[in-house]
Structures are given as structure tokens and as C-alpha cells.
Length: 452
Ligand SMILES: NC(=O)c1ccc[n+]([C@@H]2O[C@H](COP(=O)([O-])OP(=O)(O)OC[C@H]3O[C@@H](n4cnc5c(N)ncnc54)[C@H](O)[C@@H]3O)[C@@H](O)[C@H]2O)c1
Image (tube, rainbow, N blue to C red; front, side):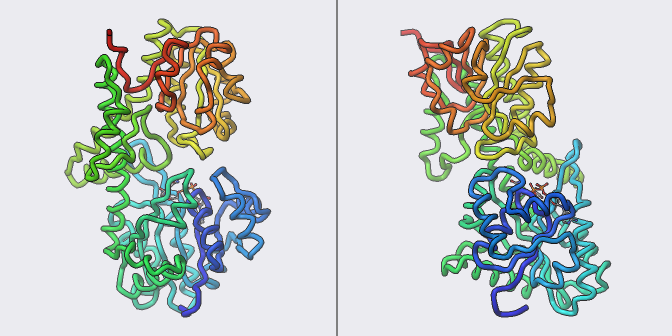
């Protein structure tokens, strides 16, 4: 590998890979993006982001202008780069299994190219893969398809991605930590050198943790399990608070979070976590451990609390309106979190499913994710062009995703537009004092008003 800035190739230009490729180009690296989806490649080639992520569009335009290269050819990408990052998808099955076929085929193609390259090359797995995958399946596939030996002939690292959608660019440009799981010292040194150049900052070294391949894989799963556990803990306490006159989970978590040993982050009660990572990664961890005869009761409980949490909103709607049959319910927010259009594993889909099962009519609005939900639910629900339009004529409104624009809604908007203004704040974005007395207002984790 040259001592100049290495050229890199990124395999899999999804939500992780494309953001990573754009950030690397922004930091001055020569980047070759590889994807098997040629339609996606041509969209990116035009400088258009194929999904919504803040700042990505601008960065991509810059990257394409500055020479981001795109190709479906693994061979070309490996020959013309020094490091290949693998960021393909690892979707989960219903039983918690992880589908590693994208990783396997990307590594097979990389291995075949390595056979012809004739120079040491570093392969870095950034996708989330079950413990043992990088040192097992990935190494075997690379060695098998290249006829080379991992270590002397090519390098291998596991470098988990911790970004969160909606803040992906910042997460990549300013990561809290960089975990380098290494097959051998030379591989780890090469990846550390890449990150030192990426950051151009002497403090990078302090944020790098070098460890084994399997520990890096476990760090990713353990981090997601811990974050999800914090949310489920807040939601468990929310259920208790909701039954206690005068109690409010927001105040309780503010107090708990002030303890520096605990911290306030991820203690926001709401309708639970969703997305493409937490659900699949926790199920995968549980299933992986189960296969070894090890039970992970905290992970199991974290999932159980979360499975029930979206239904709390529907229970509150029933409490307020009685039978939901024929009632028009406005669902505000469809994306699994704000600032993304991703609806994989979104809580909104569970809430809508439960409402439809009770015979309610659903009208939904989201600033970015309507088309992605339309592709899944078609015309089983109505779609509104704005939050105010969704509220018009509704009997109940459930706020599911805490988009910034919803914070501007005032009690008068609900009172004026809704047929029966019942508001359920599923993410605790409204000030209850402002709403109570003006509309029928329910908030997750807030107990009934204390008798004075
Ligand atoms: N989305 C997140 O917030 C996030 C955060 C951290 C880690 N991760 C992990 O990162 C990985 C990628 O996630 P994602 O959300 O970006 O996935 P994604 O499904 O959005 O993108 C995967 C991309 O890989 C491409 N691909 C599939 N096989 C390929 C091959 N053989 N060669 C080249 N390209 C190929 C697909 O066409 C697609 O564009 C997963 O393991 C995920 O668990 C995701």
C-alpha cells in the first residue's frame, strides 16, 4: 500500500456505504463506489441521493464533481484501490437469523479480484455481522476465491459502523470511537493509518480501540443492545408513571439522567424503537447466544417491552374514544425516526396495523417517508400533504415520529381542525401544561392529573 492517501473502494452503497463514501471523498480520498444495483449507480452518478439523509445531497454533488467513481465491477474497484470497505446489507430473518449472502457474494467477488491483483490489499468489514463471521466465513471466502493467505497476502479487519440515520454524516465525520478489529497487526496498522489521515487530527489515536475481530463484532451488538435497553427501561418506567397520579416519566428520567454514571441519552420514553438495526441486531444476538445454549434475559426483556410499547398509543385512543371502528385517526410521522425517510421496522407500521385491525380509518403524514409507506401499505390508508391536512376531520391524532416541524403545532390547531380533538403525544414533544384543558391530551408516561 502506498504511503500517500490510500484509494478506497466501498462495496454496497446503501444508507451506510453511500454516506461513508461521500464522507471519504469529502476528506480528499479517491473513492470507488461499488453496487450490484445498476439503477442505483446511475442515480448516484447524476449526483442524486437515492434516499433522504441530512447533508448527503450536497456532499454527494461535491463528491461526484470531485471524482467519486462508480462501478458494478468488483474487479476494477479492487485493482484500483488499496482498501475495500464492505458495507452491504445483512438483513435479519423472523427467527433472528442473519442473511449473510450479500457479504458472502461481495467477498467472493473481492477474492477473485485479489487473485489477479498481485499486491497486498486490505479488506474491511463494516457491515454488522454475527460474532465469528469475519474470522470464519469472510476469511474462508476470501482465501477460497483468491487462493491467497489472509495475513501475508491480504489484510482483514472488522470495523463496525455506529452511525445513526438522521445524523449519519456527523456520525462518520466525528465518531465517538473507531473500533478496529484486526486479523493481524499489519491489517490493524493499515486501517489505523487510514483513520489518522481521514481525521487529520492528532486526537484520533485516543478514539481508536484496537482489538480482535470477534470483539469488534461483539462491541457492535453489545452497543445496540445497551442503547435499546436504555430506551426500553425508560418505557417500562413510563408505564408505571402513567398509572400514578401526578407522575411524569420525563421528569423522572431527567433526574435519573443527571447521574453521570447513567447519562440522559436514550432515556426518552415513547412508542419504542424501530429501524433497520435495533430490531434485527437484538434478535440476532439473542438467537446467536441461544445457539450456544446461553440465555440473555436483559436482551429478551428489552425486546418484550418494545414489542408492546406501540400498542400503548392504541390503548390510549381506545380509552379516549371507546370503540375505534369508523373513527378517523391521524398518524403524524411514519419514518422510524426523524430526519430520515427509512421506514424499515418503523413503529408507525405497527401502530397503523393495530388501528386498522380495530376498524379505524387512518390518515397519515410524514415530511419525507410517505412514498416509502405507500409502497408497503398502498391505499389501505390515506396520505395527507401536511400535518394540518391530516388533522382535518380526525377524531384522534397520534404523534408517532418526533419531526421538528410537529413541535410548532399548537393546541388551537388540533382544536380547530379535528372533529374530536384527542391528542396522543407518543414522543413527548408537547408541553402538557399548554395542551391540557384545551384538547383531550394524553402523553406516554404521564399519569392522570393529581386531584388538588
Ligand atoms: N442503516 C443504519 O443505520 C446502520 C447503522 C450501522 C450499521 N449498519 C449496518 O450496515 C450494513 C449496511 O446497512 P444499510 O442500511 O446501508 O443497508 P442497505 O440495505 O441500505 O444497503 C446495502 C447495499 O448493498 C448493495 N449490495 C448488495 N450486495 C452487494 C454486492 N455483492 N456488492 C456490492 N453491493 C451490494 C445493495 O444493492 C444495497 O445498495 C448492515 O450490516 C447494517 O446492519 C446500518
